Length: 427
Image 1 (tube, rainbow, N blue to C red):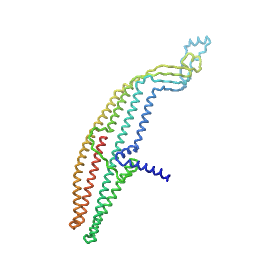
Image 2 (image 1 turned 30 degrees about the horizontal axis):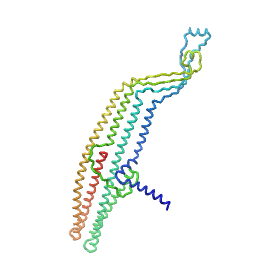
Image 3 (image 1 turned 90 degrees about the vertical axis):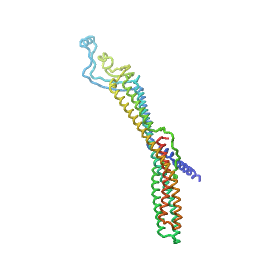
Image 4 (image 1 turned 45 degrees about the vertical axis):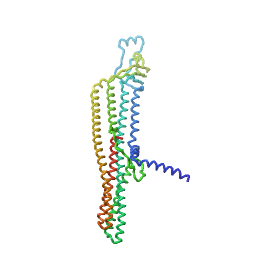
């Protein structure tokens, strides 16, 4: 008994976790968390971190170790008269050898890079932000796919309920018809007609259940867990009054503009001069003291320190064109933003009209269902009195079922239209 209790608790926890997926909001949340593209956020952050780190490392002293061995066709020598004078005083003049060797260590430290590293950091951050906003747009579209599956299941649930209601009516009338047949009031063909309709309704029910099961499996793949309850909950939604949308696409447009601005700053830094301090030490032959190297082939230690300026004047040749290209790209993003807002306004207008149409249809449906029910009930009484035949009764039952189904479909379509509008406004 004590061994079973932890298993029971574990099963209870798993069951409660799965039950969280029975509302539309929960399904949306779980779909975002389970969708494979969610892992891209971490990769974008890592890439941003590496790029910023590389930009900052421009301020770390750059150390280069090198070695070289050369042979040259000519080397510096003393004038002939000076060489003769040295020989006369017993000084050997070997001159600088043509084979030369050097092991060097160069150290460079940025003093001012014209703002290049700062611009590279800004570009890395803006590019990462643009990628994040692009991922937001992709995951936002996932919500729309989840909505379609969720409301599709609700519609199929209503079809199941209406067909089951029709089957219940047919079963009731089939029992009555058999009783009439046994009492000699009805013929076998009347019983057969009702039974055929009952079998056909059962087939329709199985087909709808199979479709619903397919939709449920697709939704379970999106949310990454099973749907425990047999029926999903209808969302309770109100039509949003606020028309100020905060769509992720707008954030993406803003991020694109920010990236282009950062790239413009980077272009401007390319025409700035650079200053850096440097130090070089080398061990080899010849050394910096050329006169000593002319009289001795020994390797020596040598060093140089100083400040260097470099200025790439060629960057001015393309600066204007590069800036104009980025300006054109920014204007293109602005046009895309205007097109998006225009299409969004059109979509909202269409959704407003659809909501109004469905509300009116539901009001009419209520009256139609009440009338169809009254006609069907009257037909059952007429059937009992032999006024109408079985075909007329079955037609009345079918008409009532269709009217009830139409009302349920319109109710769910209204909820879906409201949900679509809230999705359009990102509310």
